[in-house]
Image (cartoon, rainbow, N blue to C red; front, side, top):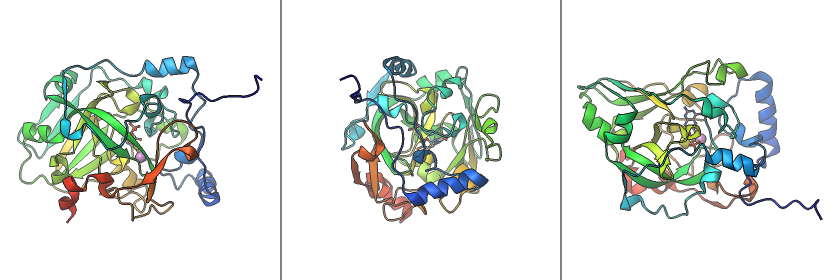
Length: 327
Ligand SMILES: Nc1nc2c(c(=O)[nH]1)N[C@H]1C(S)=C(S)[C@@H](COP(=O)(O)O)O[C@H]1N2
Ligand SMILES: [Mo]
């Protein structure tokens, strides 16, 4: 009975269920290219099923083992099981490498060695970190965090890295510094944006935080994931992780950090200010203009509409850490 096709459980969904309204929105967007935004890719094809060879290729992107880290016991249990890396590492948002979730092989073009991360602006000690600094300057720890995309899917991820606060201590912002701007790698010969008619987007990808948010216990720079150095599709060699905010706040492949007196513009907020706020905290009762945020789908096996659903938590469940930032 060879025509009965049994899907292996690691096979990822090829499309999302989508309402007619969302579909029509997408058609309109494709016509005039005016309404680009997150959520578009979530309604489109996420890629071919992964073959055994594909699985091997995916596993080859997983980075080198790291051993010089401790496990932070406070963040050893996210209250949900950790997402299988075969799902997490082939379901990515990294628009520089394409508009679908299936960018993991495109992202292998990202050059990560050597790497320079420049920290400048309103600081006493401007610094430029190289790869050795990223892995050895600050003690590395593992933290298992819940992760919530504004598109209403969620994962649980074991990050490796160091608190953002370590960088604050290193560079010593002046009292004038009130905001921080983070900028991602961009090279139009490597990243795909311009070649797919999105050259009008505000590249490079950039994000921002208030300085108190950066100093919060949870705010983290990740240089690895699942016990290994960061795969390129997740934002090698260093990316931001702010687990109480929507995923788009976590810029990948950071090359520049700048301390500022004024709130900086940010990538998605510039594209669509009504949909993507600067603050972007996870708030179940504040719907995205095109969908509800009350529930979320846990990235897993099978088709996306079959993924386990659960209630979205205020501040993604991290209110004890961050609620007083917004009192
Ligand atoms: N430079 C850059 N950073 C980015 C993005 C991006 O397109 N470019 N996408 C963001 C979004 S919307 C999400 S949900 C997360 C996805 O991270 P992951 O692919 O590692 O799960 O990265 C964020 N950081
Ligand atoms: Mo996202």
